[in-house]
Image (cartoon, rainbow, N blue to C red):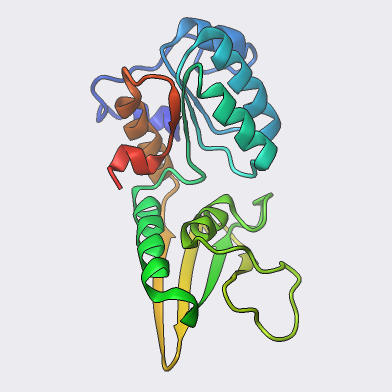
Length: 220
C-alpha cells in the first residue's frame, strides 16, 4: 500500500528510498534513507527502533500489538531520534480519539463507556491497537476482558468481532441515564493508513528527537 501510494504522484517532497523494496537488511535501510516507516511486527519493530537510534534517523511506527515494555523502548529511543508512533494512521480515527477524550471528560462516571471493534478474520491482536488507543483516550482503566456479572462504574469495556475482510470498524458508546451517545469510524480502504503515514513523513521533516503521534501531525 505504501509503495502504491507513494508512486501515485500525490506526495511531492517524498521519494522511494534506496533499498526500500527489501527488508532483508534493515541496517542499510536506515543508513541509506532519511526516514523509515515501519508496519511490521512487535519483534521486528523493537529491532528497527534500535537501528534507528544507532543511525539517529526518524522512524514512523504503525505496528499494532505493542506492549508496555515496547512503549518504554520507544520513549527511550525518542531521547536520541524522532519517533512517531500511532496504533492507527488514519486521520479520521485520530480525530475520533480526540472526540472520545473530550466526551469522556465532560460526561463523567454517570456514563458507561463500551468500545466495539470489528476486523478481518486474520487479524492477530485482540482487542485491536486502535480500540486500546480509544480506551486510553477515555482516561479510564480497562474492564476485565472476561468480565461477568454487574458492570463496574468508571471502567471502559471492549467487545471484539473477527470475520471476512473488514478493514476496520470502531464504535465508542457512552451509555447514560435515559440516553446514549455513539461515536464511530469505519475504514473502507486500507490505503487510508498509507496516506496517513506519508502525511506523517512530511510532518517529521526536520523534527528534533522526541516521541510524537498522529495527533501531533494533525494538531489535535
